[in-house]
Image 1 (cartoon, rainbow, N blue to C red):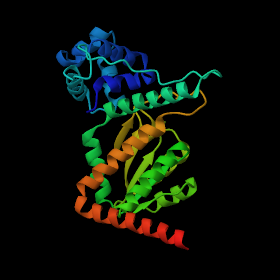
Image 2 (image 1 turned 180 degrees about the vertical axis):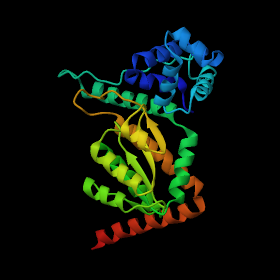
Image 3 (image 1 turned 30 degrees about the vertical axis):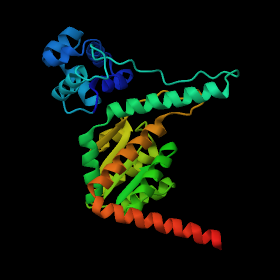
Image 4 (image 1 turned 90 degrees about the horizontal axis):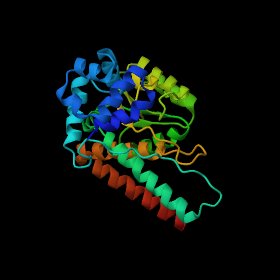
Length: 294
């Protein structure tokens, strides 16, 4: 499901000049990767083989061979053109005092759909399966996130608790760090940070690693400190601001990854998870009914 072209477009802006030459050449000529060696590719792009290798690493790939396979799939995908291209939308709305509610609503929904489509193009089924397995095997899961990502982290926390997975989360960054310090090799950390550069989240993630716990990162495509720390990365697209006020689409794409991962966890542990989910739903419903009668 992961698209090689989508990956290249997501990391374009963060590439060095030498890497960008490779990326630009592949986006314009995706068949190049299918038929060329890495040395031939570098020569055609006016760059060098080491830049091509760094580009693959920046995209979170194991190497040039994996990029070749992804671009080959793109060429035969019905969702892309004959040249394997798909126009990445500009995910921004220019604010104007004359905008009607109808126009704003249409724009917000459309841009959200576009962001989710980009998120889908980056889903790595193997990484999702591995993340689900790690979570199911762990003694406990420490969930980390600050700012807007804290809301995503909390959503994941409450989902895991409903199916009986021992999970820990706090909106207090200091408490998150304390939780991370109490982990060991039997535990798992899951860190949410769109930028991958949130100091509080990265500090807690580092403590989780020091404690011996495995670490999963949910972060945007490209190289960042959190991605480098994690043993497994679930990527979300780099999104432009939805409105030029600081609001962004990163929350919706991270929540989509949470839902994909959570549903996979339930499906891979269905005999255990469904009874627990049904029990928790019934208990919460009964409690609400009792509160109404009180």
